[in-house]
Image (cartoon, rainbow, N blue to C red; front, side, top):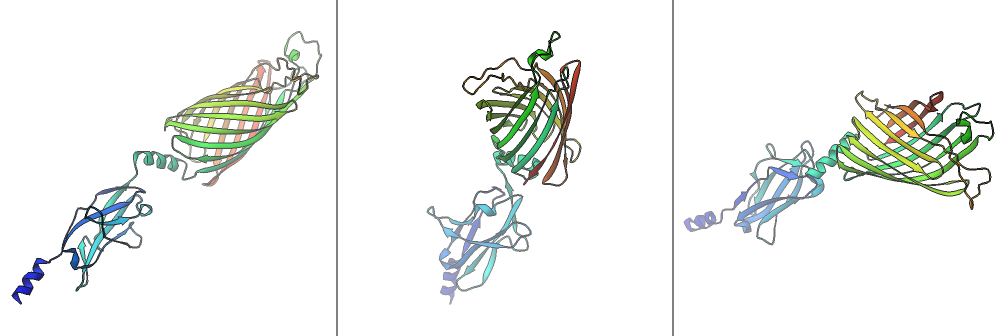
Length: 353
Protein backbone atom coordinates (compact mmCIF):
# COMPACT_ATOMS: atom_id res chain seq x y z
CA UNK A 1 0.00 0.00 0.00
CA UNK A 2 2.84 2.36 0.84
CA UNK A 3 4.41 1.74 -2.59
CA UNK A 4 1.10 2.41 -4.36
CA UNK A 5 0.66 5.70 -2.46
CA UNK A 6 4.17 6.79 -3.43
CA UNK A 7 3.52 5.96 -7.09
CA UNK A 8 0.27 7.92 -7.10
CA UNK A 9 1.95 10.88 -5.43
CA UNK A 10 4.67 10.76 -8.05
CA UNK A 11 1.98 11.02 -10.75
CA UNK A 12 0.24 14.08 -9.33
CA UNK A 13 -1.02 16.33 -12.14
CA UNK A 14 0.56 19.78 -11.99
CA UNK A 15 -0.81 22.58 -14.20
CA UNK A 16 1.11 25.82 -14.70
CA UNK A 17 -0.67 28.66 -16.48
CA UNK A 18 0.39 32.29 -16.95
CA UNK A 19 -2.83 34.26 -17.55
CA UNK A 20 -2.87 37.05 -20.17
CA UNK A 21 -3.93 40.50 -19.03
CA UNK A 22 -4.80 41.89 -22.47
CA UNK A 23 -5.82 40.62 -25.89
CA UNK A 24 -6.22 42.22 -29.30
CA UNK A 25 -9.73 42.43 -30.67
CA UNK A 26 -10.77 40.15 -33.52
CA UNK A 27 -7.66 38.01 -33.16
CA UNK A 28 -7.63 34.43 -31.76
CA UNK A 29 -6.61 34.28 -28.10
CA UNK A 30 -4.36 31.34 -27.19
CA UNK A 31 -4.46 30.20 -23.56
CA UNK A 32 -1.27 28.28 -22.87
CA UNK A 33 -0.42 25.89 -20.07
CA UNK A 34 2.21 23.31 -19.17
CA UNK A 35 0.98 20.04 -17.67
CA UNK A 36 2.93 17.47 -15.68
CA UNK A 37 1.57 13.90 -15.79
CA UNK A 38 -0.99 14.84 -18.44
CA UNK A 39 -1.63 11.15 -19.08
CA UNK A 40 -3.80 11.10 -15.95
CA UNK A 41 -6.22 13.71 -17.41
CA UNK A 42 -9.55 12.76 -18.91
CA UNK A 43 -10.31 16.40 -19.82
CA UNK A 44 -8.61 19.81 -19.63
CA UNK A 45 -10.77 22.77 -20.68
CA UNK A 46 -11.07 26.56 -20.75
CA UNK A 47 -14.46 28.14 -20.12
CA UNK A 48 -14.83 31.69 -21.41
CA UNK A 49 -17.42 34.38 -22.08
CA UNK A 50 -17.99 38.05 -22.57
CA UNK A 51 -19.32 39.44 -19.34
CA UNK A 52 -23.04 38.87 -18.98
CA UNK A 53 -23.16 36.19 -21.72
CA UNK A 54 -23.25 32.40 -21.48
CA UNK A 55 -20.15 30.27 -20.98
CA UNK A 56 -18.45 28.59 -23.93
CA UNK A 57 -15.82 25.86 -23.78
CA UNK A 58 -12.55 25.27 -25.61
CA UNK A 59 -10.56 22.08 -25.02
CA UNK A 60 -6.80 22.11 -24.52
CA UNK A 61 -4.72 20.35 -27.17
CA UNK A 62 -1.00 19.75 -27.37
CA UNK A 63 0.74 21.82 -30.06
CA UNK A 64 3.92 21.06 -32.00
CA UNK A 65 6.00 22.78 -29.32
CA UNK A 66 4.72 20.48 -26.59
CA UNK A 67 2.53 23.16 -25.00
CA UNK A 68 -1.11 22.70 -24.07
CA UNK A 69 -3.20 25.33 -25.86
CA UNK A 70 -6.90 26.24 -25.80
CA UNK A 71 -7.94 28.62 -28.56
CA UNK A 72 -10.63 31.27 -28.19
CA UNK A 73 -11.78 32.02 -31.74
CA UNK A 74 -11.38 35.55 -33.12
CA UNK A 75 -15.12 36.41 -33.31
CA UNK A 76 -15.36 35.84 -29.56
CA UNK A 77 -12.54 38.25 -28.74
CA UNK A 78 -14.34 41.57 -28.66
CA UNK A 79 -14.10 44.67 -26.46
CA UNK A 80 -14.34 45.59 -23.73
CA UNK A 81 -13.30 42.35 -22.00
CA UNK A 82 -13.31 38.58 -21.87
CA UNK A 83 -13.25 36.35 -18.78
CA UNK A 84 -12.37 32.69 -18.29
CA UNK A 85 -11.47 29.90 -15.90
CA UNK A 86 -9.84 26.48 -16.33
CA UNK A 87 -11.02 23.03 -15.27
CA UNK A 88 -9.34 19.63 -15.33
CA UNK A 89 -10.75 16.15 -14.79
CA UNK A 90 -8.69 13.13 -13.76
CA UNK A 91 -9.57 9.79 -15.29
CA UNK A 92 -10.73 8.56 -11.91
CA UNK A 93 -12.26 11.76 -10.58
CA UNK A 94 -14.63 14.71 -11.08
CA UNK A 95 -13.96 17.95 -12.96
CA UNK A 96 -12.17 20.45 -10.73
CA UNK A 97 -11.49 24.17 -11.19
CA UNK A 98 -7.72 24.57 -11.61
CA UNK A 99 -7.38 28.28 -12.37
CA UNK A 100 -9.85 31.01 -11.33
CA UNK A 101 -13.46 29.83 -11.05
CA UNK A 102 -16.93 30.23 -12.50
CA UNK A 103 -17.84 32.56 -9.64
CA UNK A 104 -14.57 34.53 -9.90
CA UNK A 105 -13.26 34.22 -13.48
CA UNK A 106 -10.04 35.85 -14.66
CA UNK A 107 -10.67 39.05 -16.71
CA UNK A 108 -8.82 39.84 -19.94
CA UNK A 109 -8.97 43.39 -21.29
CA UNK A 110 -9.66 43.36 -25.04
CA UNK A 111 -8.18 46.24 -26.98
CA UNK A 112 -8.32 47.33 -30.58
CA UNK A 113 -5.09 47.89 -32.48
CA UNK A 114 -4.18 51.53 -33.18
CA UNK A 115 -5.64 51.29 -36.70
CA UNK A 116 -8.76 49.58 -35.38
CA UNK A 117 -9.16 52.22 -32.68
CA UNK A 118 -9.08 54.94 -35.35
CA UNK A 119 -11.61 52.99 -37.42
CA UNK A 120 -13.90 52.44 -34.44
CA UNK A 121 -13.60 56.09 -33.45
CA UNK A 122 -14.69 57.20 -36.92
CA UNK A 123 -17.50 54.63 -36.93
CA UNK A 124 -18.67 55.91 -33.54
CA UNK A 125 -18.68 59.49 -34.82
CA UNK A 126 -20.96 58.29 -37.63
CA UNK A 127 -23.16 56.56 -35.02
CA UNK A 128 -22.26 53.15 -36.41
CA UNK A 129 -23.55 53.91 -39.93
CA UNK A 130 -21.45 52.79 -42.88
CA UNK A 131 -23.98 53.53 -45.66
CA UNK A 132 -25.69 56.76 -46.62
CA UNK A 133 -28.17 57.62 -49.36
CA UNK A 134 -28.84 61.29 -50.12
CA UNK A 135 -31.20 63.12 -52.46
CA UNK A 136 -31.36 66.91 -52.75
CA UNK A 137 -32.38 69.73 -55.08
CA UNK A 138 -31.81 73.48 -55.19
CA UNK A 139 -32.95 76.50 -57.16
CA UNK A 140 -30.39 79.25 -57.83
CA UNK A 141 -31.49 82.68 -59.10
CA UNK A 142 -28.97 85.36 -60.07
CA UNK A 143 -31.72 87.91 -60.59
CA UNK A 144 -33.05 89.66 -63.68
CA UNK A 145 -30.80 91.40 -66.20
CA UNK A 146 -32.72 93.92 -68.39
CA UNK A 147 -35.78 91.69 -68.28
CA UNK A 148 -33.85 88.48 -69.00
CA UNK A 149 -33.77 85.57 -66.61
CA UNK A 150 -30.56 84.17 -65.15
CA UNK A 151 -31.15 81.06 -63.06
CA UNK A 152 -30.68 77.30 -62.84
CA UNK A 153 -31.75 74.36 -60.77
CA UNK A 154 -29.87 71.21 -59.85
CA UNK A 155 -31.02 67.85 -58.46
CA UNK A 156 -28.81 64.99 -57.36
CA UNK A 157 -29.00 61.59 -55.68
CA UNK A 158 -26.09 59.50 -54.41
CA UNK A 159 -25.03 56.48 -52.38
CA UNK A 160 -21.99 56.52 -50.09
CA UNK A 161 -20.21 53.60 -48.47
CA UNK A 162 -17.84 54.49 -45.63
CA UNK A 163 -14.68 52.41 -45.26
CA UNK A 164 -13.42 54.77 -42.51
CA UNK A 165 -9.76 53.86 -42.94
CA UNK A 166 -7.24 55.63 -45.20
CA UNK A 167 -10.02 55.54 -47.77
CA UNK A 168 -12.78 57.42 -45.98
CA UNK A 169 -15.63 56.67 -48.37
CA UNK A 170 -16.66 55.76 -51.90
CA UNK A 171 -19.61 57.60 -53.40
CA UNK A 172 -21.49 57.27 -56.67
CA UNK A 173 -24.39 59.36 -57.89
CA UNK A 174 -26.27 61.00 -60.72
CA UNK A 175 -28.00 64.29 -61.29
CA UNK A 176 -29.11 66.98 -63.67
CA UNK A 177 -28.58 70.71 -64.07
CA UNK A 178 -30.79 72.97 -66.15
CA UNK A 179 -30.94 76.74 -66.42
CA UNK A 180 -31.45 79.85 -68.50
CA UNK A 181 -28.65 82.33 -69.17
CA UNK A 182 -28.90 85.82 -70.74
CA UNK A 183 -26.74 86.57 -73.80
CA UNK A 184 -23.23 87.75 -72.82
CA UNK A 185 -23.83 91.29 -74.09
CA UNK A 186 -26.70 91.88 -71.64
CA UNK A 187 -24.20 92.22 -68.78
CA UNK A 188 -22.52 95.19 -70.47
CA UNK A 189 -23.56 98.82 -70.07
CA UNK A 190 -23.69 99.36 -73.83
CA UNK A 191 -25.95 96.38 -74.55
CA UNK A 192 -28.15 97.02 -77.57
CA UNK A 193 -30.87 94.53 -76.59
CA UNK A 194 -29.87 91.91 -79.12
CA UNK A 195 -29.76 88.23 -78.33
CA UNK A 196 -32.03 85.98 -76.32
CA UNK A 197 -31.71 83.98 -73.15
CA UNK A 198 -30.44 80.50 -73.82
CA UNK A 199 -31.22 77.18 -72.18
CA UNK A 200 -28.25 75.39 -70.66
CA UNK A 201 -28.18 72.03 -68.96
CA UNK A 202 -26.99 68.46 -68.80
CA UNK A 203 -27.47 65.11 -67.10
CA UNK A 204 -24.48 63.54 -65.39
CA UNK A 205 -23.12 60.75 -63.25
CA UNK A 206 -20.11 60.84 -60.95
CA UNK A 207 -17.77 58.80 -58.81
CA UNK A 208 -15.99 60.08 -55.71
CA UNK A 209 -13.20 58.86 -53.44
CA UNK A 210 -12.36 60.48 -50.10
CA UNK A 211 -9.12 59.89 -48.19
CA UNK A 212 -8.02 60.45 -44.58
CA UNK A 213 -4.50 61.62 -43.91
CA UNK A 214 -5.59 61.84 -40.27
CA UNK A 215 -8.82 62.47 -38.39
CA UNK A 216 -8.22 66.19 -38.97
CA UNK A 217 -7.04 66.30 -42.58
CA UNK A 218 -8.69 64.68 -45.58
CA UNK A 219 -9.14 65.12 -49.30
CA UNK A 220 -11.73 64.11 -51.88
CA UNK A 221 -11.48 63.57 -55.62
CA UNK A 222 -14.43 63.44 -58.03
CA UNK A 223 -14.89 62.50 -61.69
CA UNK A 224 -17.98 63.62 -63.59
CA UNK A 225 -19.34 62.24 -66.86
CA UNK A 226 -22.35 63.83 -68.51
CA UNK A 227 -24.19 64.62 -71.68
CA UNK A 228 -25.83 67.77 -73.02
CA UNK A 229 -27.38 68.63 -76.38
CA UNK A 230 -23.92 68.77 -77.95
CA UNK A 231 -22.96 65.30 -76.73
CA UNK A 232 -20.59 63.81 -74.14
CA UNK A 233 -18.88 66.07 -71.61
CA UNK A 234 -16.59 65.54 -68.65
CA UNK A 235 -15.65 67.27 -65.44
CA UNK A 236 -13.73 66.90 -62.23
CA UNK A 237 -13.76 68.24 -58.71
CA UNK A 238 -12.10 67.95 -55.34
CA UNK A 239 -11.79 69.41 -51.87
CA UNK A 240 -9.41 69.64 -48.93
CA UNK A 241 -10.89 69.20 -45.45
CA UNK A 242 -9.26 70.53 -42.28
CA UNK A 243 -10.93 69.35 -39.07
CA UNK A 244 -13.02 66.33 -38.13
CA UNK A 245 -15.52 65.33 -40.80
CA UNK A 246 -18.38 65.03 -38.29
CA UNK A 247 -17.29 68.03 -36.21
CA UNK A 248 -16.22 71.60 -36.85
CA UNK A 249 -14.12 71.78 -40.01
CA UNK A 250 -13.28 73.86 -43.06
CA UNK A 251 -13.43 72.79 -46.71
CA UNK A 252 -11.86 74.42 -49.73
CA UNK A 253 -12.75 72.91 -53.06
CA UNK A 254 -14.38 73.23 -56.42
CA UNK A 255 -15.28 71.61 -59.69
CA UNK A 256 -15.18 72.36 -63.38
CA UNK A 257 -17.60 70.97 -65.95
CA UNK A 258 -17.05 71.05 -69.69
CA UNK A 259 -19.32 73.60 -71.46
CA UNK A 260 -21.06 74.44 -68.20
CA UNK A 261 -18.61 76.34 -66.04
CA UNK A 262 -16.75 76.17 -62.75
CA UNK A 263 -17.57 76.52 -59.08
CA UNK A 264 -14.93 77.22 -56.40
CA UNK A 265 -15.90 77.50 -52.74
CA UNK A 266 -14.84 77.84 -49.14
CA UNK A 267 -17.16 76.25 -46.57
CA UNK A 268 -17.16 76.19 -42.77
CA UNK A 269 -19.17 73.45 -41.05
CA UNK A 270 -20.00 72.91 -37.41
CA UNK A 271 -22.01 70.41 -35.40
CA UNK A 272 -22.24 72.09 -32.01
CA UNK A 273 -26.04 72.05 -31.67
CA UNK A 274 -27.43 68.59 -30.93
CA UNK A 275 -29.19 67.13 -34.01
CA UNK A 276 -28.56 70.33 -36.05
CA UNK A 277 -25.43 70.07 -38.26
CA UNK A 278 -24.92 73.25 -40.29
CA UNK A 279 -22.50 75.11 -42.50
CA UNK A 280 -21.85 78.33 -44.40
CA UNK A 281 -20.16 78.57 -47.80
CA UNK A 282 -18.99 81.26 -50.21
CA UNK A 283 -18.90 80.26 -53.90
CA UNK A 284 -17.25 81.89 -56.89
CA UNK A 285 -18.90 80.52 -60.02
CA UNK A 286 -19.89 81.19 -63.61
CA UNK A 287 -22.40 78.32 -63.73
CA UNK A 288 -24.39 77.92 -65.81
CA UNK A 289 -22.34 79.26 -68.67
CA UNK A 290 -24.86 78.36 -71.33
CA UNK A 291 -22.26 79.18 -73.91
CA UNK A 292 -23.81 77.31 -76.82
CA UNK A 293 -24.43 79.51 -79.87
CA UNK A 294 -27.57 78.97 -81.96
CA UNK A 295 -25.61 77.42 -84.83
CA UNK A 296 -23.68 74.95 -82.65
CA UNK A 297 -23.90 71.23 -83.42
CA UNK A 298 -22.26 68.15 -81.88
CA UNK A 299 -19.69 68.26 -84.69
CA UNK A 300 -19.21 72.03 -84.44
CA UNK A 301 -19.61 73.03 -80.75
CA UNK A 302 -19.19 76.80 -80.96
CA UNK A 303 -19.14 78.57 -77.62
CA UNK A 304 -18.92 82.14 -76.43
CA UNK A 305 -17.88 83.82 -73.19
CA UNK A 306 -21.14 83.09 -71.34
CA UNK A 307 -22.27 84.89 -68.20
CA UNK A 308 -19.75 86.66 -65.95
CA UNK A 309 -18.57 85.19 -62.68
CA UNK A 310 -20.92 85.54 -59.72
CA UNK A 311 -20.60 85.31 -55.94
CA UNK A 312 -22.85 83.07 -53.85
CA UNK A 313 -23.32 82.98 -50.05
CA UNK A 314 -25.10 79.80 -48.92
CA UNK A 315 -26.19 78.60 -45.48
CA UNK A 316 -27.11 74.93 -45.08
CA UNK A 317 -28.54 73.02 -42.13
CA UNK A 318 -29.74 69.55 -41.33
CA UNK A 319 -32.12 68.20 -38.72
CA UNK A 320 -31.56 64.64 -37.48
CA UNK A 321 -35.17 63.59 -37.15
CA UNK A 322 -34.09 60.06 -36.14
CA UNK A 323 -30.83 58.15 -35.83
CA UNK A 324 -31.24 57.17 -39.48
CA UNK A 325 -33.00 60.13 -41.11
CA UNK A 326 -31.72 63.69 -41.58
CA UNK A 327 -33.72 66.44 -43.28
CA UNK A 328 -31.66 68.97 -45.25
CA UNK A 329 -32.30 72.63 -46.06
CA UNK A 330 -30.36 75.33 -47.90
CA UNK A 331 -30.82 79.10 -48.20
CA UNK A 332 -28.61 81.71 -49.84
CA UNK A 333 -28.15 84.77 -52.02
CA UNK A 334 -26.05 85.39 -55.13
CA UNK A 335 -25.35 87.98 -57.79
CA UNK A 336 -23.35 88.39 -61.01
CA UNK A 337 -22.69 92.02 -60.19
CA UNK A 338 -23.55 94.46 -57.40
CA UNK A 339 -26.78 95.88 -58.87
CA UNK A 340 -28.92 92.78 -58.71
CA UNK A 341 -29.14 89.24 -57.42
CA UNK A 342 -31.47 86.48 -56.32
CA UNK A 343 -32.01 83.73 -53.79
CA UNK A 344 -31.00 80.11 -53.36
CA UNK A 345 -33.52 77.70 -51.90
CA UNK A 346 -33.17 73.95 -51.62
CA UNK A 347 -33.70 70.87 -49.55
CA UNK A 348 -33.21 67.15 -49.39
CA UNK A 349 -33.11 64.03 -47.28
CA UNK A 350 -30.32 61.73 -46.07
CA UNK A 351 -30.84 58.17 -44.88
CA UNK A 352 -28.05 56.33 -43.03
CA UNK A 353 -27.71 52.75 -41.89
